Image (cartoon, rainbow, N blue to C red; front, side):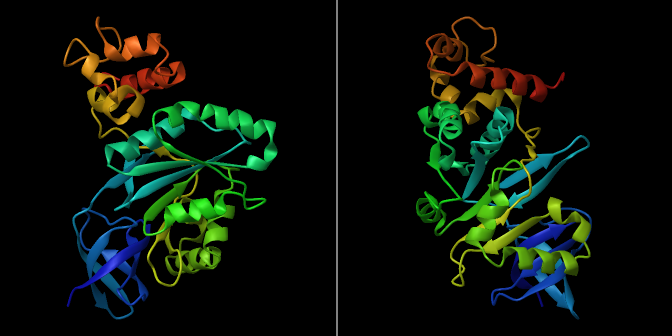
Length: 294
């Protein structure tokens, strides 16, 4: 008999599924289509000490990542995406923009957290780089994992939500996850051992409950992967960039690409300093990548 479950880890053809009582077991997908991802609600059927995923329940949203070869889904049913960067090392504005666009396109609230607020001048510079995002209304928090400053405010933002957390190497993501979920390292090792995927641990995605009451959760996705945007139409791109979306009603042509047309509200706002030049350059690069001829 089928029963409901939650996918809490996924690797290839295998998943780790949790039932309503909190018990977990390995499950395999039935068929080759619609592989489940972390965060999916599924119907599964037990079979001896493992199980089979029979179906995936409708998703509220779905995020993709991409590499040189393909685009692949990796997390579903999120309330927010926490992007953790730091005063040091430097972070990629392009990767940050892709994460925000992917979130907005799926109706997911992003949150930008800048770690290492204890570094003084280096933090001030990183915080200044976030100014365009604050101006467009993105939630931005300062944090010092070293001193604990800002951690309580961050925890308050996580309550009652399912949050995907990601960030570049050196930003402090592993430290943050282990601080919020002390059992995370042990849980990851257990899952990897069960899935025989220890060598793939650094590329796996895992679900962790924030507390025994299971009212909030973190999804840890290693690295600051390239978010897959190829499912988006280039002409829709500006709708998912809040600073540009605010200007779309001012364009002379309904199908304006915001690249060369006369009477473009976006380019006028750029000239007036209402849109940051680096943000517009990111738009140009992504528009070229998402265009059919690219």
